[in-house]
Length: 246
Image (cartoon, rainbow, N blue to C red; front, top):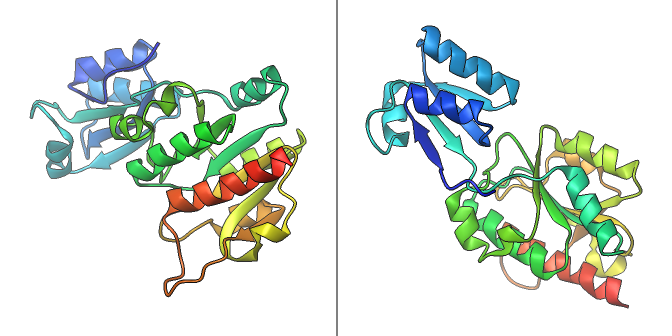
């Protein structure tokens, strides 16, 4: 089942969304509003580890499409999230060694959509994103993915570093893209692999980079020194594809 809603407003509607099992990415609550119905909504949100943001009325008004938010606005995923195990099972079902994209705080929905599209075309088995400080599966992401979101599972995890450790224990190794790394052409990128792509501005965070086995750079010849995150993901992904085909 796919979820069509993105913004849900009003106390009854938001509470029903949680109780019916809809995937809610973020909950925005009017700061200082702590009456019974709002407390019930917050309690349901915490059961599902939904991110809760307490904001002022101006912010809620901007988020609202109707103007009748009653102090609560929920942002629901446009598509369902997978589990990390679903991604590993997808690889096993194809008889292939896992190839996974790990995205460290990608914030632009167009970048996320483009990366999901690239992941699908490159034969990756799935994409993993963090719950916090990152865009979720919004309608804009779905549109930019050009349909790939229907075929490439996306899992959302609380802690990227911990997830990498868990996947290492299952036989994967990890390479992250960073300007200060070894040329990707000098690295062996075969086998069960996770490709880590960092935030559009700050790149891969220090803690995540420390968990990676290799740091790879993309050779650049121009006057500027960085690529768009989705472009970097595509370049790195297809070097992995090239090596896996050899």
